[in-house]
Amino acid sequence: MRYAHVEHEGRRFAAVEVDGGWVELDGDLDQVFAGKPVATKPGAAVVATPRFLAPYTGGTIFGIGLNYRQTILEMGFPLPTEPYLFPKLANSVTGPDAPVVADPGVSREVDWEGELAVIIGRRASKVPAVEALDHVWGYTAANDVSARDVQRADPQWVRGKGLDTFCPLGPVAVTRDGIPDPQDVRIRTWIDGELVQDGNTSDMLFRVPALIEYLSTHFTLQPGDIILTGTPSGCGGFMDPPRFVQPGSNMRVEVSGVGTLHNPVVARL
Image (tube, rainbow, N blue to C red; front, side, top):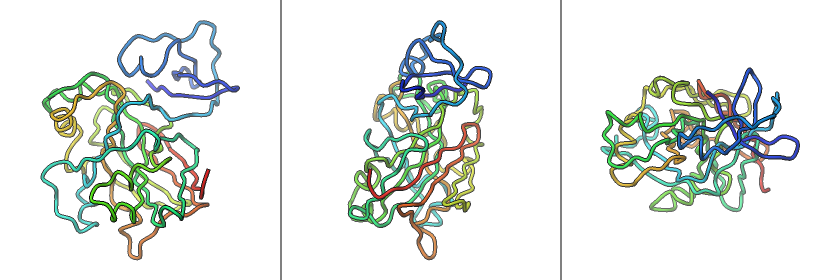
């Protein structure tokens, strides 16, 4: 099933897809991600074309770097022996069709990273990989927007990855059965209509169960937490010559089984 945060006629609410339209839930996505039964709101109409918002409920966002073999080769880095972990800050979250800010006063090297995002559905602490997918609620699409010059300037990646609007999510959240195998998901990214990334999660160095095992060994994962699982090759910062988005650019990320996440780039909000 597919769920979303939507806006319609000035109201924002959680909704479920029914017969090609969207129906308001008598509850919120926090409850959905936690596996609680949430019915549709009595008398709610089917909305054909709502405006989609980020399917995010305020949980922790864990980013994973250097997780695709071809990407690591493209960057010229050695293969990591453990997942490379960084946080995405809550203020970095934005939704479908919402602007991403590439402020030249902050960064002149704003890059794209189309990704599969995992949404946790059950509390997970020290979960072995063989049980990890039982703790997944579902999936969404993400763009791990990155300021490469800021990223290089710091020994850690918090600023380069956590700037406002640098974590588009959406357009919908798909339950686990919608993507039966998270290691067989096609990810494509277009910049201004040009295909720049075309990869598959089969190229992950650390697969989704291994990431959950690793994270839950160090932190307790809660329903609604999100894991950005890394990006295929084709990021602009590692092209020859490097290429970055500018105000006026348009980014589009497509994750099979989820849909397409589009975001225009602006200089400021």
